[in-house]
Image (cartoon, rainbow, N blue to C red; front, side, top):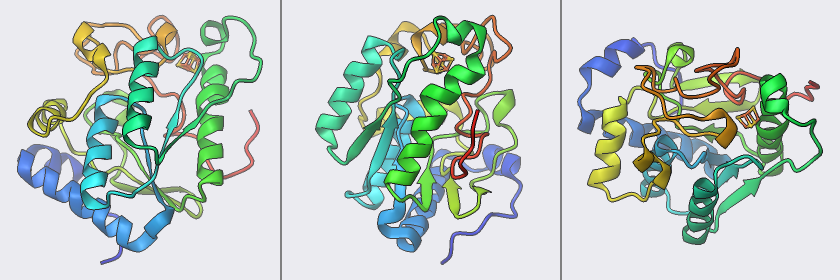
Length: 238
Ligand code: SF4
């Protein structure tokens, strides 16, 4: 079966499929992509709870499936420690980072530019160096206002497919899966975070929006770093 975009209503799937049906659907999507793209199917792992679910699902489908982590100089120590543990468990996870010079406090003055340099550019490099034809993400459409319009299968860049196999999962179902399968998870969640990113731009928040603690006090509040919204294949200059 070829990997093709669904014509089903995503919101209907979110509300009408139960947990077990969503797990089966996600496994099916990854299996189909794996059959179609083989070694050119790669999982992006952000070290957050959603990535931990996707990574575990992908390993159930194909234990050798490769992955990449994009990290930055601003990731919290707990996330860096969790990254080292994940790479020890899964040596097929490659790390990408941009350690070039950036202006002081760029994350406050120009957060979009900071994310572009520290997150989007290394993601482009991962896609290129790993010769990725289809990348798998942990994006979910119930995470917040900026994520409602995504699809399970997207082709924003020509020649690069993006698979969002847990797009229709609720936050509760993520924790349900992690708990039922005993999946190791970033310890920062114990402190009350619901969405994790770089330390200066991530806060514990009481907002009903799961991503409401991201980039508080900037124009990006609750928004996106850019890897899901900007071109990844083109030679794109900021
Ligand atoms: S999340 Fe903040 S510190 Fe991290 S890359 Fe984006 S703006 Fe910079």
